[in-house]
Image (tube, rainbow, N blue to C red; front, top):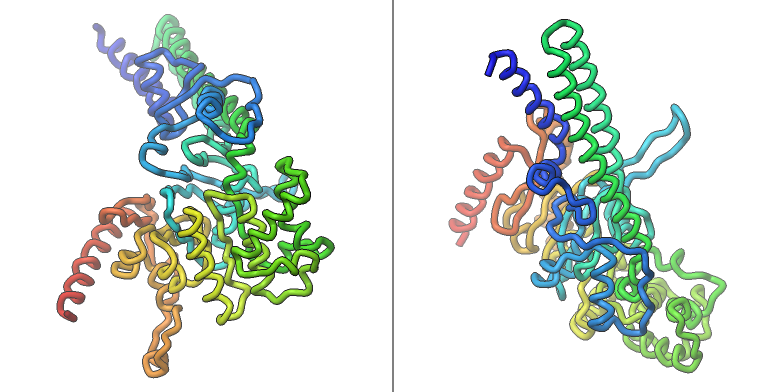
Length: 466
């Protein structure tokens, strides 16, 4: 083989790698199986199911035949079921766009957030106002059409976004165009022959077309899954909203508010609906006489209980609690927390608990995720997070917790978190890594080494105290 031909071969391989740099799974598909468009892999997904266009039949109960029917139509991941993962959020991105033309800009409310919640677990999501906690909860329950990523509930994909796939198509075309320009320049300058030019151009086009076919197939399946979510499955996910005043319609009675979900799901028997409403009210400590009253006749704590009853009447399996105690008095907060704890045990609920107060979350949640500016910066069990708080923002939140002792409260030092001062990401960008078993943190390599030293110091101080 001539030296010139060898150089051209190396260029061809380089162009393939460039075209597929952002899609290694597609590269493997193309190399090994020539790309099966009927069954394509999603980002970080291993199992696929071909998509059909038949609607899911609406049965009263989701039985075995129904589950098999859903599997054939929508993306399903058996490993989530095997590992008792009730909810999996994978690379969730939620952007909001404003304006038009040159004045159009986007707000990255949630950027690349991933976590899993197991059956029976209470998962805490904490952070300051505006960090994306509520947006994450609303995206899970499909109040927003997510921008990118996937959400799985009981193994079924209930929501997905196609922005990443659309951008991959766009940049694949750009990379192909640049490659063809480069080849044309080499041909003009006599660096390669016409035959070599045609061969490399055809190869580059083939690889680009394969990537585009795969991404278009993924977009097709995403659109299919988003429009074929089983309503009986989504009924198992309910949400308690943050504001107990604004979340209740002032023109509707308590019975109308609580039974509205039942009517939407096709339950129109008034006697049966009334019975379910009364049962839900009794679960949250209210009485039947309240059914004919209006929201303005109740206190804040009672209104929040009505909001909880509205969620419970649907007999949920997964409950999203969006700061259910933030608008309540301190004396009422303990009642609502104890109520949710009792309901969790009684009904076998799994919870996503969104809050500001880390001390409340520590008491109530099994695991805690800390969010800042749309990103998850730390994730660990409650005990581990308080034992080894590593990220500067986590330390800032912990320093804000008031102490009941007035003597120590005087000396409490607030830690202010400034990302520009705390991090240097000019050389290496951060990534979400597992620094201890079950303890994840957003950091780059120098920070990881620094955090490991901090863990040793914290452990040493803990031993000396004992």
